Length: 511
Image 1 (cartoon, rainbow, N blue to C red):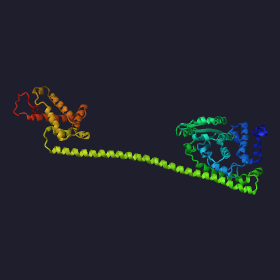
Image 2 (image 1 turned 30 degrees about the horizontal axis):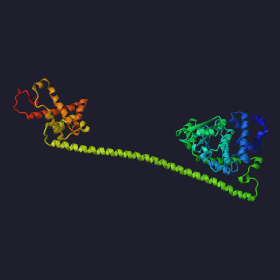
Image 3 (image 1 turned 90 degrees about the horizontal axis):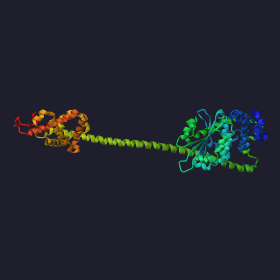
């Protein structure tokens, strides 16, 4: 059927195709078999015939007389040694996809050599397209073509090269899915979308049914969108956040060249192809005099040496950049660790200061308690405050809360309570309501505590708060009882012992 479709096409429109069939039939069968185009065109034989004719037209236009040579990196095929150097630079690259969906053709203009010509780049593109068509997934599914657009370099974008690339892709024996990766400007510049429209986005859309633009507004957004399309992280270049490195493409070129050398040894070209195909590029040039050939040879060597120097310089710069990035990452990690250690050191210093202060407080509290027990107490209330009643009833709670007072502050408290307590209490009042006899006494004690300095009265105020809140009520009651009993006893000791029982103002201690 495809033969019938070819016969229906006028003869002047298929000259390059007929020349390929005549001069390189073995090449025609291996690199561009009609079944490849039929599969790429979804088994539409008429469209496949037209695409095959356009493919050979473009191939002859790009390679010239070398179009009928095998697509190899051996140096004596369609790619010249200079073209091989341009190919190894990495513009474009063919990335294998580990997810099983197919291969990826990735364009990154930063990888292109400035000294390389437009025609050399187009030859590299057509070579990679031909290699990708060997994979049936590229013919039945899609060949992912990703073009990375960098905003600051849009102004020097080669529009003619982009147009020719779209034509090569549209006539290739592959189903193409084109994706433009757009890095938006940070600010102060026009959006790249407007510039893409100016460069002819409509032309690309006419060539491809699957044309998408992916914008990176936040870091890592492109990687997420590539993953949504089914690509794995190992198939995404590291320039956009993946793990695939361009060094892998250099190794692929070496492996591919080794494979193609063995393949060409098994293929016997036809006599017509042998008359055109030459063993070395020097013999492929038109007939020249020995003098002109010798004069042109150093120029070719210098040009090739210049390209090799550019490649070596780029690889060296990439290695240095990688080392610098590793050092910067290590520096960042060390700074984070240093900040963490400084914060821990500061925290430990504060804990040490608090521990030393606590030790000093404990030492000073023990010394005061010892002196208070050894020295004679002028008042029973001081013993009630610092003695066994607090230790028995309040216990560890007061020690933990920092409650304590010196012997002098206790004496002042007792003296103030004694001065406020009424010297005599009515016997009838005691008989009627014994509990009410302590009301004025407790009011006086609370007033005395409130008038004391904060550092001395803090412990007793805390006791009062505990009593009001219902906590440690028994301990507070013991302290209050000790204070009141000591105050009344002190007042009772000042009265005359010869008071009669019928006296209305007998001391409270008698009851």
